[in-house]
Length: 212
Image 1 (cartoon, rainbow, N blue to C red):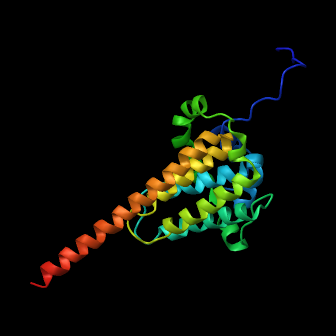
Image 2 (image 1 turned 30 degrees about the vertical axis):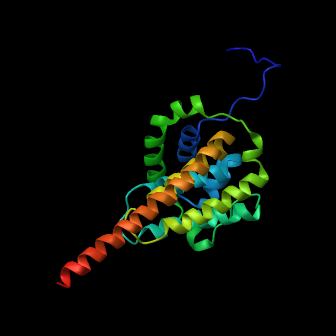
Image 3 (image 1 turned 90 degrees about the vertical axis):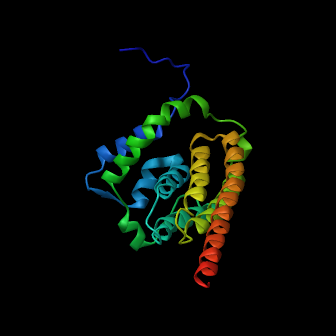
């Protein structure tokens, strides 16, 4: 066994996928409440929850169902704006929670890129991931979650992707990624505006064609 170096600093936190794997392994019931999941994520609760919920919203979803997956994002981000120390969920939503199998699917997708992510992301520009910045990030994520709830096909993907970047930025305390996520917000607004414009143009063309 290697001797413990008394001069060594604290061990770096486990990668998120490994921490999630530990949570799945150590939790006996098949389903975790969101409160239990947040408690197990410790200091990475806000960023971890944003990432988990946003990752679900990035996937193509049946029309009209994105609102159900955007609600947890609204709840989490609103509490970030209020500066709460830990997340809280309404009892009905909390009991719904998340299945172990859902977390395992997320782990399988995330761990493929996590090693590359950890080579790039690191604590820097601390002010952009501090308490005040976290509130502003929460406000941005809340507005993005409102957009993600709009029942237009594919409309939720771009806002959810921007929230995912904010989640990663908070997990790794990376202010540079906060800046990149802010740019992604502008891009997501442009993408959704393009979707709406394309949809309106298509409907106008269809209406004019049918009116002939």
